[in-house]
Amino acid sequence: MLEFSLKPEIIILDDDRDVGETLELILNKLGYRSIFFDSVEQGKQYFEKELNPIVFLDIHMPGTSGLEILPYFKNLESKTQVIMMTGERDINNVVTSLTHKASDFLLKPFSIQTVQIAIQKAYDYYVILKDKDIREEVIMRDLRLASRVQGKIFSIPDLSPYKVEADVTPISFVSGDFNVILKKAKSTLLLLGDVERITASLPG
Image (cartoon, rainbow, N blue to C red; front, side):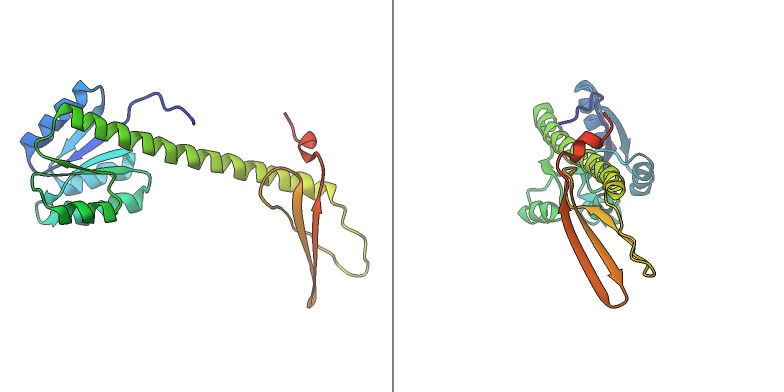
């Protein structure tokens, strides 16, 4: 797993300034950078620029519900972990939050330990998702490189006066496996092949 050394900046979105500022103090005490908003629109605007890994979101907001805002964050950045907060012990809110992909649900008032556990769990999962994205990009980069290498290895036969085109696409990994589809008029020729030790041809 890739390492992310800096602690994340956390957004707090709560219409109760006392609660928000208290949570901000708790997060600072735990060594996290945080920014508090009691305005939904201001919180959204900031998130659109920063795409913070973790958001603390109160369920009851002026003129709306945190449950309605939750999908906004997840749609904009699916890896962001949203921790819902409420002072009410309503199981329906818990179920709805989890259905909308909230990462956790905290009841007010919360302790420093409870907040710390929730953040650590949320951030660990965020790092896993981020790591997965990075590794998938590395794989796709290697596949693009493999496609170019294999395209040079595969020699297109001279079938004049016919025009023959080849599309070389690695199937899954940089192992030399490839498939080539040749199309002419209504006929299709599918060529599957394997080149041993193709990795020896790659740089590095």
